Length: 379
Image (cartoon, rainbow, N blue to C red; front, side, top):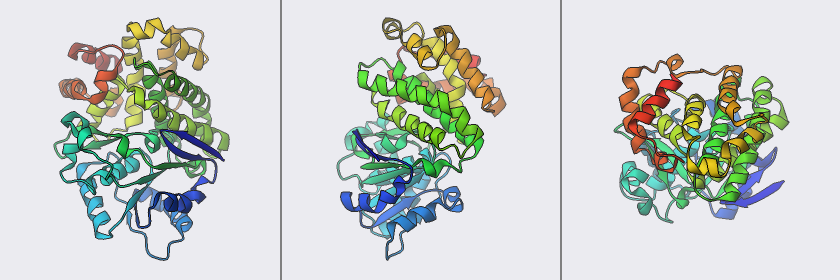
Protein backbone atom coordinates (compact mmCIF):
# COMPACT_ATOMS: atom_id res chain seq x y z
CA UNK A 1 0.00 0.00 0.00
CA UNK A 2 1.53 3.29 -1.11
CA UNK A 3 1.09 6.28 1.19
CA UNK A 4 1.90 9.51 -0.64
CA UNK A 5 2.11 12.83 1.20
CA UNK A 6 2.15 15.50 -1.47
CA UNK A 7 -0.46 18.28 -1.08
CA UNK A 8 -2.70 15.83 0.77
CA UNK A 9 -2.68 12.26 2.03
CA UNK A 10 -3.35 9.65 -0.63
CA UNK A 11 -4.20 6.00 -0.06
CA UNK A 12 -3.52 4.26 -3.37
CA UNK A 13 -3.97 0.56 -4.12
CA UNK A 14 -6.44 -2.03 -5.32
CA UNK A 15 -8.92 -2.42 -2.46
CA UNK A 16 -7.97 0.88 -0.79
CA UNK A 17 -11.66 1.75 -0.28
CA UNK A 18 -11.63 -0.61 2.71
CA UNK A 19 -9.64 2.08 4.56
CA UNK A 20 -12.55 4.56 4.50
CA UNK A 21 -13.84 4.00 8.04
CA UNK A 22 -10.37 4.41 9.49
CA UNK A 23 -9.77 7.61 7.53
CA UNK A 24 -13.10 9.06 8.73
CA UNK A 25 -12.05 8.37 12.29
CA UNK A 26 -8.58 9.80 11.74
CA UNK A 27 -9.82 13.17 10.52
CA UNK A 28 -12.84 13.32 12.83
CA UNK A 29 -15.78 12.76 10.48
CA UNK A 30 -18.57 11.06 12.45
CA UNK A 31 -21.66 12.13 10.52
CA UNK A 32 -20.72 12.21 6.84
CA UNK A 33 -22.83 13.22 3.88
CA UNK A 34 -22.04 11.12 0.81
CA UNK A 35 -22.16 13.11 -2.43
CA UNK A 36 -22.45 10.92 -5.52
CA UNK A 37 -24.65 10.37 -8.59
CA UNK A 38 -27.38 7.97 -9.67
CA UNK A 39 -25.01 5.98 -11.88
CA UNK A 40 -22.71 5.17 -8.97
CA UNK A 41 -25.71 4.00 -6.96
CA UNK A 42 -26.99 1.85 -9.85
CA UNK A 43 -23.55 0.31 -10.38
CA UNK A 44 -23.45 -0.93 -6.78
CA UNK A 45 -20.38 1.15 -5.89
CA UNK A 46 -22.33 3.14 -3.31
CA UNK A 47 -23.31 -0.10 -1.54
CA UNK A 48 -19.65 -1.12 -1.43
CA UNK A 49 -18.73 2.16 0.22
CA UNK A 50 -21.61 2.08 2.69
CA UNK A 51 -20.59 -1.46 3.71
CA UNK A 52 -17.08 -0.26 4.55
CA UNK A 53 -18.47 2.36 6.92
CA UNK A 54 -20.39 -0.22 8.96
CA UNK A 55 -22.39 2.59 10.52
CA UNK A 56 -25.26 1.74 12.87
CA UNK A 57 -27.12 4.90 11.80
CA UNK A 58 -28.26 5.56 8.22
CA UNK A 59 -25.74 7.64 6.26
CA UNK A 60 -27.40 10.43 4.24
CA UNK A 61 -26.68 10.24 0.52
CA UNK A 62 -27.06 13.02 -2.04
CA UNK A 63 -27.09 11.17 -5.39
CA UNK A 64 -28.34 13.92 -7.71
CA UNK A 65 -25.00 15.24 -8.95
CA UNK A 66 -25.46 16.51 -12.53
CA UNK A 67 -22.81 15.81 -15.22
CA UNK A 68 -21.68 19.43 -14.87
CA UNK A 69 -22.29 20.36 -11.20
CA UNK A 70 -24.11 23.62 -10.65
CA UNK A 71 -25.17 26.06 -7.98
CA UNK A 72 -28.66 24.57 -7.72
CA UNK A 73 -27.23 21.14 -6.86
CA UNK A 74 -24.89 22.73 -4.31
CA UNK A 75 -27.86 24.34 -2.55
CA UNK A 76 -29.82 21.09 -2.47
CA UNK A 77 -26.88 19.12 -1.08
CA UNK A 78 -26.12 21.82 1.50
CA UNK A 79 -29.73 21.59 2.70
CA UNK A 80 -29.30 17.84 3.23
CA UNK A 81 -25.94 18.40 4.99
CA UNK A 82 -27.54 20.81 7.45
CA UNK A 83 -30.70 18.76 7.92
CA UNK A 84 -28.66 15.77 9.10
CA UNK A 85 -26.17 17.90 11.06
CA UNK A 86 -23.25 16.44 9.12
CA UNK A 87 -19.66 17.21 9.98
CA UNK A 88 -17.91 16.16 6.78
CA UNK A 89 -18.39 15.05 3.19
CA UNK A 90 -17.46 11.83 1.39
CA UNK A 91 -17.24 12.49 -2.35
CA UNK A 92 -17.81 9.34 -4.39
CA UNK A 93 -17.66 9.44 -8.17
CA UNK A 94 -15.97 11.30 -10.98
CA UNK A 95 -14.88 14.91 -11.03
CA UNK A 96 -18.47 16.14 -11.01
CA UNK A 97 -19.30 14.53 -7.67
CA UNK A 98 -15.99 15.52 -6.12
CA UNK A 99 -16.29 19.12 -7.27
CA UNK A 100 -19.88 19.28 -6.03
CA UNK A 101 -18.75 17.93 -2.66
CA UNK A 102 -16.14 20.68 -2.42
CA UNK A 103 -18.79 23.29 -3.16
CA UNK A 104 -20.93 21.80 -0.40
CA UNK A 105 -18.01 21.82 2.03
CA UNK A 106 -17.56 25.55 1.46
CA UNK A 107 -21.18 26.69 1.26
CA UNK A 108 -22.35 24.62 4.24
CA UNK A 109 -19.85 26.34 6.51
CA UNK A 110 -19.74 29.90 5.15
CA UNK A 111 -22.33 32.62 4.64
CA UNK A 112 -23.08 33.76 1.11
CA UNK A 113 -23.98 32.30 -2.28
CA UNK A 114 -21.61 30.09 -4.26
CA UNK A 115 -20.80 33.00 -6.57
CA UNK A 116 -19.10 34.85 -3.73
CA UNK A 117 -16.48 32.07 -3.46
CA UNK A 118 -15.55 32.01 -7.16
CA UNK A 119 -11.90 32.87 -7.82
CA UNK A 120 -12.79 35.48 -10.44
CA UNK A 121 -15.01 37.19 -7.85
CA UNK A 122 -12.17 37.38 -5.32
CA UNK A 123 -13.64 34.41 -3.48
CA UNK A 124 -10.40 32.71 -2.47
CA UNK A 125 -9.95 35.16 0.40
CA UNK A 126 -13.45 34.36 1.69
CA UNK A 127 -12.81 30.62 2.09
CA UNK A 128 -11.50 29.76 5.54
CA UNK A 129 -10.42 26.82 7.65
CA UNK A 130 -14.07 26.40 8.65
CA UNK A 131 -14.55 24.49 5.37
CA UNK A 132 -15.96 21.02 6.10
CA UNK A 133 -13.46 18.16 5.67
CA UNK A 134 -13.78 16.12 2.49
CA UNK A 135 -12.71 12.56 1.75
CA UNK A 136 -12.60 11.97 -2.00
CA UNK A 137 -13.01 8.55 -3.62
CA UNK A 138 -12.67 8.78 -7.41
CA UNK A 139 -14.46 6.27 -9.64
CA UNK A 140 -13.01 7.62 -12.90
CA UNK A 141 -9.45 8.34 -13.98
CA UNK A 142 -9.59 11.81 -15.43
CA UNK A 143 -10.01 14.98 -13.40
CA UNK A 144 -7.77 14.23 -10.43
CA UNK A 145 -10.10 16.41 -8.37
CA UNK A 146 -9.47 14.10 -5.42
CA UNK A 147 -6.13 15.86 -4.86
CA UNK A 148 -6.94 19.27 -6.33
CA UNK A 149 -7.40 22.59 -4.60
CA UNK A 150 -10.29 23.68 -6.79
CA UNK A 151 -13.80 22.86 -7.91
CA UNK A 152 -15.32 23.78 -11.27
CA UNK A 153 -18.98 24.69 -10.86
CA UNK A 154 -21.66 26.38 -12.96
CA UNK A 155 -23.29 29.41 -11.34
CA UNK A 156 -26.94 30.32 -11.65
CA UNK A 157 -25.96 32.94 -14.25
CA UNK A 158 -24.42 30.25 -16.48
CA UNK A 159 -20.75 30.98 -15.84
CA UNK A 160 -18.47 28.00 -15.27
CA UNK A 161 -16.09 29.13 -12.53
CA UNK A 162 -13.36 27.85 -10.28
CA UNK A 163 -13.75 27.78 -6.50
CA UNK A 164 -10.11 27.52 -5.51
CA UNK A 165 -8.45 27.47 -2.11
CA UNK A 166 -6.05 25.29 -0.12
CA UNK A 167 -8.99 24.70 2.24
CA UNK A 168 -10.97 22.77 -0.38
CA UNK A 169 -8.25 20.17 -0.92
CA UNK A 170 -9.68 16.85 0.35
CA UNK A 171 -8.15 15.77 3.64
CA UNK A 172 -7.54 12.35 2.12
CA UNK A 173 -7.92 10.79 -1.31
CA UNK A 174 -8.71 7.09 -1.48
CA UNK A 175 -7.66 5.95 -4.95
CA UNK A 176 -8.86 2.42 -5.60
CA UNK A 177 -8.45 1.34 -9.26
CA UNK A 178 -10.92 -1.49 -8.67
CA UNK A 179 -13.71 1.10 -8.57
CA UNK A 180 -13.00 1.98 -12.23
CA UNK A 181 -13.17 -1.58 -13.61
CA UNK A 182 -16.78 -1.17 -14.75
CA UNK A 183 -16.28 2.20 -16.45
CA UNK A 184 -17.63 2.04 -20.05
CA UNK A 185 -15.11 2.36 -22.93
CA UNK A 186 -16.11 5.83 -24.16
CA UNK A 187 -16.12 7.23 -20.61
CA UNK A 188 -12.74 5.59 -20.01
CA UNK A 189 -11.43 7.25 -23.17
CA UNK A 190 -12.90 10.70 -22.45
CA UNK A 191 -11.75 10.81 -18.83
CA UNK A 192 -8.37 9.41 -19.83
CA UNK A 193 -7.86 12.19 -22.37
CA UNK A 194 -8.79 14.60 -19.60
CA UNK A 195 -5.89 13.23 -17.55
CA UNK A 196 -3.57 13.54 -20.54
CA UNK A 197 -4.67 17.14 -21.08
CA UNK A 198 -4.02 17.97 -17.44
CA UNK A 199 -0.52 16.52 -17.51
CA UNK A 200 0.29 18.30 -20.77
CA UNK A 201 -1.15 21.67 -19.91
CA UNK A 202 0.23 21.96 -16.40
CA UNK A 203 3.67 20.94 -17.75
CA UNK A 204 3.45 23.73 -20.34
CA UNK A 205 2.44 26.33 -17.74
CA UNK A 206 5.37 28.74 -17.26
CA UNK A 207 5.69 28.74 -13.46
CA UNK A 208 8.99 27.35 -12.15
CA UNK A 209 8.16 24.11 -10.38
CA UNK A 210 10.46 21.22 -11.37
CA UNK A 211 8.83 18.68 -9.00
CA UNK A 212 5.42 19.39 -10.56
CA UNK A 213 6.94 19.12 -14.03
CA UNK A 214 8.40 15.72 -13.19
CA UNK A 215 5.10 14.47 -11.81
CA UNK A 216 3.22 15.72 -14.88
CA UNK A 217 5.63 14.12 -17.35
CA UNK A 218 5.53 10.78 -15.57
CA UNK A 219 1.73 10.94 -15.48
CA UNK A 220 1.67 11.70 -19.20
CA UNK A 221 3.97 8.73 -19.88
CA UNK A 222 1.67 6.40 -17.92
CA UNK A 223 -1.56 7.64 -19.47
CA UNK A 224 -0.29 7.58 -23.06
CA UNK A 225 0.85 3.99 -22.74
CA UNK A 226 -2.24 2.65 -20.96
CA UNK A 227 -5.27 4.60 -22.19
CA UNK A 228 -5.92 2.34 -25.17
CA UNK A 229 -5.49 -0.79 -23.06
CA UNK A 230 -7.91 0.51 -20.45
CA UNK A 231 -10.42 1.47 -23.14
CA UNK A 232 -10.23 -1.89 -24.95
CA UNK A 233 -10.26 -4.03 -21.82
CA UNK A 234 -11.87 -2.41 -18.81
CA UNK A 235 -10.80 -5.32 -16.60
CA UNK A 236 -7.09 -4.71 -17.23
CA UNK A 237 -6.01 -3.99 -13.66
CA UNK A 238 -2.55 -2.72 -14.62
CA UNK A 239 -3.98 -0.28 -17.14
CA UNK A 240 -6.61 0.90 -14.68
CA UNK A 241 -3.99 1.46 -11.98
CA UNK A 242 -1.77 3.49 -14.31
CA UNK A 243 -4.67 5.59 -15.59
CA UNK A 244 -5.79 6.39 -12.05
CA UNK A 245 -2.23 7.34 -11.17
CA UNK A 246 -1.94 9.58 -14.25
CA UNK A 247 -5.17 11.31 -13.31
CA UNK A 248 -3.95 11.91 -9.78
CA UNK A 249 -0.53 13.10 -10.99
CA UNK A 250 -1.99 15.66 -13.37
CA UNK A 251 -3.91 17.22 -10.50
CA UNK A 252 -0.93 17.07 -8.13
CA UNK A 253 0.87 19.28 -10.64
CA UNK A 254 -2.09 21.69 -10.97
CA UNK A 255 -0.43 24.12 -8.58
CA UNK A 256 1.50 25.40 -11.63
CA UNK A 257 -1.71 26.40 -13.36
CA UNK A 258 -3.32 25.29 -16.62
CA UNK A 259 -3.97 27.29 -19.79
CA UNK A 260 -5.97 27.94 -22.95
CA UNK A 261 -7.25 24.37 -23.29
CA UNK A 262 -9.12 24.76 -20.03
CA UNK A 263 -10.10 28.38 -20.67
CA UNK A 264 -11.88 27.20 -23.80
CA UNK A 265 -13.38 24.02 -22.36
CA UNK A 266 -14.60 25.79 -19.22
CA UNK A 267 -16.24 28.48 -21.32
CA UNK A 268 -17.87 26.10 -23.81
CA UNK A 269 -18.90 23.71 -21.03
CA UNK A 270 -20.70 26.58 -19.31
CA UNK A 271 -22.54 27.43 -22.53
CA UNK A 272 -23.53 23.80 -23.17
CA UNK A 273 -23.26 21.71 -19.97
CA UNK A 274 -24.04 18.52 -21.94
CA UNK A 275 -20.54 18.53 -23.44
CA UNK A 276 -17.98 16.33 -21.68
CA UNK A 277 -15.02 18.25 -20.30
CA UNK A 278 -12.44 15.58 -21.17
CA UNK A 279 -13.69 15.31 -24.74
CA UNK A 280 -13.42 19.07 -25.18
CA UNK A 281 -9.89 19.06 -23.78
CA UNK A 282 -8.86 16.38 -26.27
CA UNK A 283 -10.25 18.41 -29.16
CA UNK A 284 -8.59 21.68 -28.10
CA UNK A 285 -5.17 20.25 -27.25
CA UNK A 286 -3.56 20.23 -30.74
CA UNK A 287 -4.52 23.83 -31.54
CA UNK A 288 -3.35 25.11 -28.14
CA UNK A 289 -0.07 23.21 -28.34
CA UNK A 290 0.57 24.76 -31.75
CA UNK A 291 -0.17 28.22 -30.32
CA UNK A 292 2.08 27.65 -27.29
CA UNK A 293 5.01 26.39 -29.30
CA UNK A 294 6.54 29.86 -29.73
CA UNK A 295 6.29 30.80 -26.04
CA UNK A 296 9.72 31.68 -24.56
CA UNK A 297 9.33 29.27 -21.64
CA UNK A 298 8.49 26.46 -24.06
CA UNK A 299 11.56 27.18 -26.20
CA UNK A 300 14.03 27.79 -23.38
CA UNK A 301 13.27 24.50 -21.64
CA UNK A 302 12.64 22.43 -24.75
CA UNK A 303 9.22 21.54 -23.42
CA UNK A 304 7.67 20.29 -26.63
CA UNK A 305 10.67 18.03 -27.22
CA UNK A 306 10.32 16.65 -23.69
CA UNK A 307 6.62 16.03 -24.32
CA UNK A 308 7.48 14.19 -27.52
CA UNK A 309 9.95 12.02 -25.61
CA UNK A 310 7.31 11.13 -23.00
CA UNK A 311 4.93 10.15 -25.79
CA UNK A 312 7.58 8.04 -27.50
CA UNK A 313 7.65 10.26 -30.60
CA UNK A 314 10.62 11.08 -32.80
CA UNK A 315 10.11 14.85 -32.92
CA UNK A 316 8.14 17.72 -31.49
CA UNK A 317 6.34 18.13 -34.82
CA UNK A 318 4.54 14.84 -34.20
CA UNK A 319 2.87 15.82 -30.91
CA UNK A 320 -0.26 17.50 -32.27
CA UNK A 321 -0.93 14.88 -34.97
CA UNK A 322 -0.34 12.07 -32.46
CA UNK A 323 -2.97 13.51 -30.11
CA UNK A 324 -5.47 13.79 -32.97
CA UNK A 325 -4.72 10.19 -33.99
CA UNK A 326 -5.13 8.95 -30.40
CA UNK A 327 -8.47 10.73 -30.09
CA UNK A 328 -9.65 9.05 -33.29
CA UNK A 329 -8.44 5.59 -32.25
CA UNK A 330 -10.31 5.92 -28.96
CA UNK A 331 -13.54 6.62 -30.84
CA UNK A 332 -13.98 10.14 -29.47
CA UNK A 333 -15.25 13.10 -31.51
CA UNK A 334 -12.41 14.67 -33.46
CA UNK A 335 -13.80 18.16 -33.81
CA UNK A 336 -16.27 20.62 -32.34
CA UNK A 337 -18.63 20.29 -35.30
CA UNK A 338 -19.30 16.67 -34.32
CA UNK A 339 -20.59 18.02 -30.99
CA UNK A 340 -22.93 20.51 -32.64
CA UNK A 341 -20.72 23.54 -31.97
CA UNK A 342 -21.08 26.24 -34.63
CA UNK A 343 -19.13 29.37 -35.56
CA UNK A 344 -22.03 31.46 -34.30
CA UNK A 345 -21.10 30.31 -30.78
CA UNK A 346 -17.47 31.45 -31.08
CA UNK A 347 -17.88 35.02 -29.71
CA UNK A 348 -19.50 33.72 -26.50
CA UNK A 349 -16.84 31.04 -26.10
CA UNK A 350 -14.04 33.58 -26.55
CA UNK A 351 -15.62 36.03 -24.08
CA UNK A 352 -15.78 33.32 -21.43
CA UNK A 353 -12.26 32.07 -22.15
CA UNK A 354 -10.76 35.53 -21.69
CA UNK A 355 -12.33 35.74 -18.23
CA UNK A 356 -11.43 32.22 -17.12
CA UNK A 357 -8.83 31.79 -14.38
CA UNK A 358 -6.79 29.36 -16.53
CA UNK A 359 -6.32 32.05 -19.21
CA UNK A 360 -3.74 33.83 -17.05
CA UNK A 361 -1.42 30.85 -16.60
CA UNK A 362 -0.98 29.87 -20.24
CA UNK A 363 2.68 30.11 -21.35
CA UNK A 364 1.73 32.60 -24.07
CA UNK A 365 -0.96 35.26 -23.63
CA UNK A 366 -3.88 34.69 -25.96
CA UNK A 367 -5.95 37.47 -27.48
CA UNK A 368 -9.54 37.20 -28.63
CA UNK A 369 -8.32 36.68 -32.19
CA UNK A 370 -5.95 33.95 -31.00
CA UNK A 371 -8.86 32.12 -29.37
CA UNK A 372 -10.91 32.45 -32.54
CA UNK A 373 -8.07 30.85 -34.49
CA UNK A 374 -7.86 27.99 -32.00
CA UNK A 375 -11.60 27.43 -32.26
CA UNK A 376 -11.44 27.44 -36.04
CA UNK A 377 -8.59 24.91 -35.98
CA UNK A 378 -10.61 22.72 -33.60
CA UNK A 379 -13.89 22.84 -35.52
